[in-house]
Image (tube, rainbow, N blue to C red; front, side, top):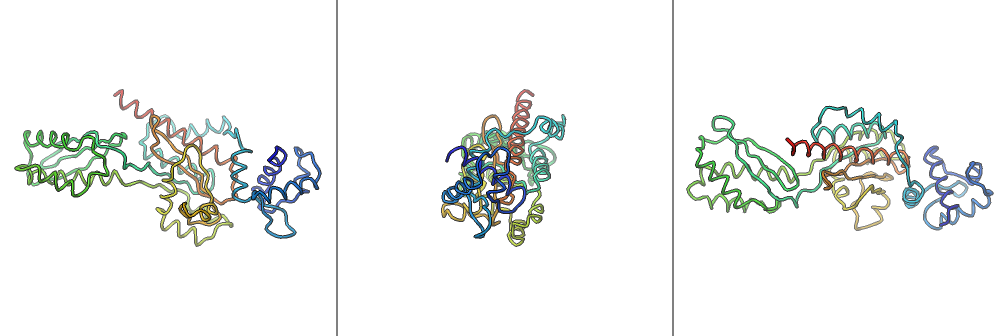
Length: 347
């Protein structure tokens, strides 16, 4: 693949994204940065077709990109695509100076990304099964009312209120805190099973009846932390894409969790996947929406991958425009949640 063929591939992709029509050699030859004849372009397009990067939908028609053509375009023709500085400043102003929770940040980012790209925007927190329990506290908050606070090695914090039959004294609270620290500190969330909970309750001896509701509450809290949270915004945007089957879109809207296995695939940086690519590889999860693409990036907290942000749209998508927006939002979320963590530690 020499530079000329790459320029021709890029020209076909750009023209097809704009018009939605197969692109012929004469249209490419008329472009100012293409300095070869239509005959040479036809020969190069035939080579690109043999390489699986272009295809001819009809015998007399021009060519359109295949998913492999889009992948090559993204990897080799789009290097250095950046969001204009004035656009970055406009987006920065959307977040304002007021601190936001991580959940609100994700909600704001997916809403904005869906509106800008006219696609569906998705986000999911990282699979937490490798997180271990760092700290458990029980805090009295009212008559017979206690809050269990669970902190993990990944920095996740959740709490749950539990109402007991009677108040606990200082000795009971002290025993419970020491008992959980001894038995649960360093234990993986995925290892805290119902069987383990039964064993913990039995090991409490005389405190078993009094404290077992708190242990059960802790178990329910750990299950909540194990549950991945999926956010989807702008799914209805996909209904305006004539290239996507309405039935596929409706199925996705009714069962959004089907994309979770795809989002949980391991990768780094910005990753682009295509429905055709997934269907042809038995090791991959299948897309619900045919003729679609999914672009996914990771956001981080203090250098750790803590979630993914993505866009679902048609395969014929302006990747040179969309990918810089996704890169901006993953970078922005990473910076803001890391700053929030630093502020919390300083406090």
